[in-house]
Image (cartoon, rainbow, N blue to C red; front, top):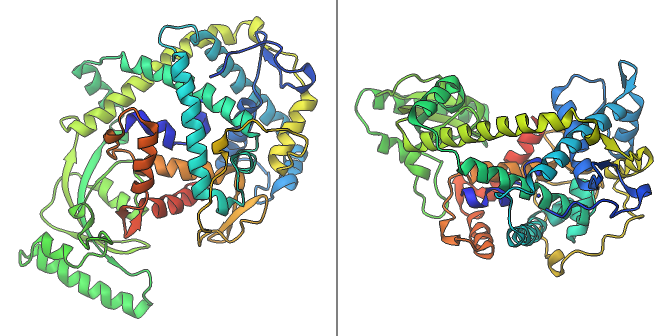
Length: 472
């Protein structure tokens, strides 16, 4: 899975190389320059969008994020904090993020571990394939039929800008990954790291049998609870086995009718299980011979803690080792970047506030009529799939769905859908693909239709979970 993780994940802050050229754009149509190199539009817009999203998530502003499109843009421009408009605050933060990225890109693109030209070309090819793949699944729901339109609707930038940034970010991420691979922590170092972060990586293995109640009225739910209670009492009395409990489970593979994973799941702090399920699992301190009832929005879960996994478990150890390497490399990069951030020669020059305002505003309004993004590859169009049932507002330029009474805005959904895809496919065996991206996507296209959990396919679950992540 590690090789292809970034191809599934579309959260652009973790995802894209081009040669940094000074003066490759007219000065009137650039964001600015860092040490002579032009800040790409895609980099700035992604940084700005991330800053806005973080403000929305924090919930500590008086901005009305229920507004959409140009109305939200005007709201951000009009509201202030400490005498400064939120627009100016967000632009300032985005510029600083972009400056740091440009510094790191310049620093590390000359390093031996930096991706080769052929690897960078592979990044571009993979990106083109990936966006075509996303178009085939999300085109109708977003109301678009080309990757150019997908870039504008979902990311607020042109396809050329999206590809440029995706390639740049991917190259930098691949460089960091190469550094991480060179780190070989000792068992003592991993043990110390685990002790400091035990809450994050503590893993509980549970077994459950699910009795669905989603379509039941209160009387039917009460009857179902009595039946579940009887099963629990019989199991705890030793009259039946867990296999007997699984015979009653609705968490089964729709093709075979067999219980998914034989009822077993591993749960960590950042797992994406329904909250009551996760809370119960993480509250367990030792394996148990008895079962309990946990209610969720899906129904009644008959739950048993089967193991508490620590560093002695190979999977947990791999997760902790990966996190250790990542933190070590991030700290190293932060330390190496700091002197450049303090160097006035690396401050942003030729800052063009008028151009910044133009590209920010169009990322809200979706009006790209003044751009010419005609260089997309021949694979830039794809036949979209039928409109998903959950999407009842695809024709709206700024809203892609209504979900539980909330408006789902175009700028965020695809990123969260991709985050969901990345999470649920963690651990999936893509080894058969080898180094072939074409084979990888062939496997992925088949995999999304497989049973995942709760009677849903990977794709169905990712769509729902992506919406939940966004609304949370």
